[in-house]
Image (cartoon, rainbow, N blue to C red):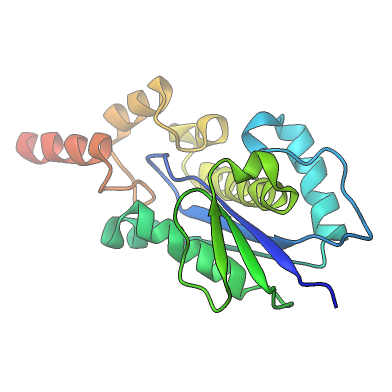
Length: 194
């Protein structure tokens, strides 16, 4: 009997806005996927193409997130681990082991191993990286439709010059992470000006 392994990765730890996403993927050895790599090294169109193939060919996948409120309440590390656990728990097939990108493992019902740089060396983690990134990007585009003044479709909530300019002009919105220094500091300035 083959021992099933899932790869787990996150997307969106660093941005000033939006949830942090995680994905867990169990690849099917009988249906290999060419071109898997760390999502950050792939173009957006390549990620989107591979995400469809992963969803079609994987034995199982789970995608989950932790909200901005959870990030602000328990911190980004704990929120990331929570999203990872939720992604693994969303799998319809129980893996025998979880391979986690990074240096920390969430509390899981199966053995887990942290692999630094695993998104570049383990195909299942690469697949999880791609699903997490494409799911988060889709969510940021959805938020952008309601709040176009922040240009989230371009920077996906990351700390860019354009994003900081929009924050200074419009102030933080509900989807901004108030526990992150640039947002927290802007809120403090706005409070003293009021």
